[in-house]
Length: 229
Image (cartoon, rainbow, N blue to C red; front, side, top):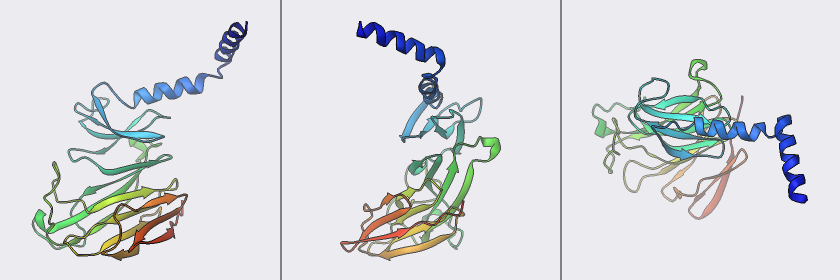
């Protein structure tokens, strides 16, 4: 009897559309991963996918997608995004790049990354790019460039993003014995140095709301990320 009542109730909810959001979310989740795509990062609200043939007749590359919407925003071409993180509708990641402040001529002299934020609730025509910042320093990197990297080693070892598009990340030095740096970027892309030193733990970065924390020499430190959006 109870089972029959449960079945009747479920059918009634389905008829009224009460179950539609869950079904719609499942469909959007499937839309985020086309047949030829490979999931390279999965967050709670969205993910990053790699395609060979592209999405909707576009060129292949890396795409970000929110499960809620199911549309794809291209975020990178041949070089994969590093340290992808999704919070709400925002996707943040880093990628090796040419330092805007550097004077190096050859890729081996560059040790920089661009940290960028995309709003995946926007379509490509609405311009999902929110802001970006260059992080790094001049100097020959002691590690070889990662595979498919056209410029050099990505110095960003970890990053976090808030639900209001603010960022914080830890960047390692180009040479052994140099200073690790903890850097923050507000939702407009303005950066500030939070901390630095050889004793910064590169794996200690964490976030709670708009507050980020890390460890330097065994001491836990924290800062509040600014947001102006």
